[in-house]
Amino acid sequence: MSLGARPIYRRENREGGANPPRAQRCKEDGRCEKPLVRENPAGKAHRPGESESEDRPGDETGLHGQAVIVFPQGEFMENQIDHSFSDAERAAIYRTIFNRRDVRGQFLPDPVPDEVLSRVLMAAHHAPSVGFMQPWNFLLVRSPEVKQRVRDIFAKAHAEAAMMFPEGKRETYNQLKLEGIVESPINLCITCDRERTGPVVVGRTHIKTMDLYSSVCAVQNLWLAARAEGLGVGWVSIFNQPELQAALGIPSEIVPIAYLCIGYVSHFHDKPELEKTGWLPRLPIADLLYYDQWGQADVARNESLTNTLATMQDDIQQRGIFPK
Image (cartoon, rainbow, N blue to C red; front, side):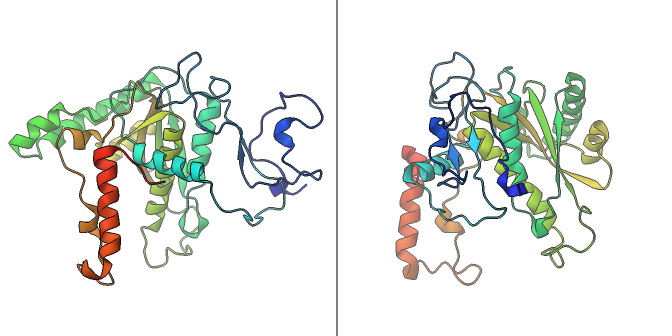
């Protein structure tokens, strides 16, 4: 059997029988009709015994780790013959994107099951990367002592940062909660090894920072997968980087990209916290869009797109209606 013929992730057969219901969609030779099957359509995990909510709709089991992704059998790198998404699948993707939040103060102490964490990490590992160099590493932090050490480094940098803002903004800044390092059950540092595949990398020959951007793609993948699982993620970036590296034992040649706080939360805010507090507004996307040349808005020739974007942004901001 080739590498591609083995499912990346699979659970034992709990349905019994030679051909359980979930296998009946597959042909006798083991090749599946569909490229991706997820037993739990909601794709969410929630705590045992908790009721359904907008953040974590119920599923058939009501337990962590029961949403199973079954990958197709077949030759490695087989083409995606059915590459379309249903309306419900597409809507779920947009819902996840528009409901993603930077979480700081709503973390619960509930542990994150390894099965859920595995799915989220696997999503991060499947981010695009320049030259397929996959420059990331994932450093899981669960130790209370290490968390406190990182929290102390944050506190020092946070005080320094406050003094950089004008006096009026400084008071507001000091009232913001900008981390959940100790409260969240899991901390995760995503790093970039810029030398992983040698000095010459396809796609990085001229833009040398492409590996850093690739690592950020892994962060975004993880963040969206976590939101789909009902997990909150908070990105903490107020650190003196060498101090963070020392606290985590990260070699000097490895670049810390993101320090993330991860866990189940009591709720997700309807809007980003910095937007809700009035720190900054959401900019109109039409003001950020140019055509053919930098600074060229050319609204008259692109009136339809401009109007559609304006309506869509109004629907999202004012009515909570997401694209489908």
